[in-house]
Amino acid sequence: MKIATIGLGYIGLPTAVMFAKHGQEVIGFDTNKDVIASLQSGRIHIEEPGLQDAFQDVLARGLLRPVSQLERAQTFIIAVPTPHTEDHSCDTSYIRQALEAVIPFLETGNTIILESTVAPKTTTCVIQPMLEGAGFTVGEDVYLVHCPERVLPGQIMMELVHNNRIIGGVTPACAIAGKAVYQAFVKGEMLLTDASTAELSKLMENTFRDTNIALANELAKLSTELGINSLKVIEMANKHPRVNIHTPGPGVGGHCLAVDPYFITTAVPEQTPLIQTAREVNSSMPKFIADSVDAITNSMAKKVVILGASYKGNVDDIRESPALKIAEHLQQRNIEVHVYDPHVACYNVNPEKAFASADMAIIATEHDDFKQVDTSLLTSMAHMRIFDTKNIFEGDHEQLMYITLGTLYRYTNHSQLQS
Ligand code: SAJ
Image (cartoon, rainbow, N blue to C red):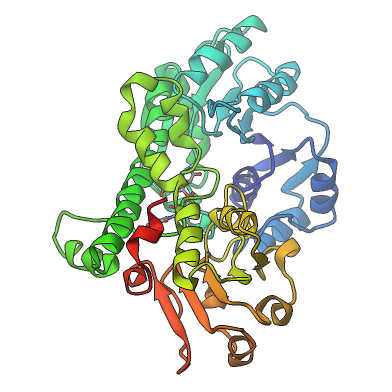
């Protein structure tokens, strides 16, 4: 089978590699010429464990060709970004452009798969009319499927193979065509359904997580006011066999949890008060962290080092990162802020400079690198304080003031956090 993947980002590239690794002829297309040039020279442009080696192998064997000009293929997989517009609704411009690029190469019998996360009904109300406008009858001439990606950055290569896969066909024949494509490597269950159910299932998975994290973040705030350790509360409550409260933190970032719930709320605003409130709670966390810095230091902090720029641990992705929002809040208070992140090139600054004379270090991202901090860096600080919003620090120092979201109440007067 010849497969063309359109969009070679965090999802499209690993997907292309995986098909090639399983013996399919794959072309990878991207409109970004720098990405194609880098891939053609053998270098991937994103950080993902295991991807570079797998990519080099299929490139060398001629199974995957990065191209800047599309060609005919049997299957076209669209994995381009679906950013949110100013009002947070789903911006379909990249998927529409991708489909326009595909249409001239389409032939009877081809399968078009949309992997990008989209608002409910996008496949049938946006994509299907474009194909029909080009003269194809979906379900007869060509097969249209929404097959949302569900992999977790950091373990994409494993999850692509082993996760269950939702295969949403516009017609039952489309779903069967989609299954035939993914059975090249998917070992998880393949769940055949219609396209709209697939779209909303994907959105609700991330909305479930976002809402649960909002509950944990609200718990962290209310426990700080009550003088109770929220992390201990979660530990206790989660011993119940049917309870799984997620973990509080500096907010929710990335291009999934912080974005997908809005695709639902903007589609049906009247019916989504809970989802909207959860988003507000999570979006309030960077300011809560900045307020906490003021409360802990009696608004005396002049310099703060933020450990981590990416939205989660051990990845280089800074999209919607709460760490960078904390930095903005602190800067607005005239605090000198240094963001240090060894995983993100533009924040891989000199740690000595970042720590020197700092009044506090905030662990905002759970990189393994931050489980320990060199004693020389700690002792170079003006005040040896670590505010560990991720509860990962394993080091110690007799002069260290170590604060988590669970123990924050010991270091603050709650009235300072009520703004
Ligand atoms: N976070 C918390 N507390 C938690 C868990 C996460 O504050 O208990 C924060 C993280 O720090 C991060 C954000 O939430 O800022 C999102 O992280 P994540 O690890 O939950 O998820 P993503 O965005 O990297 O990946 C999610 C996954 N979705 C689910 O687990 C339902 C992944 O499977 C999806 O493929 C991905 O979204 C996507 O592309 O939609």
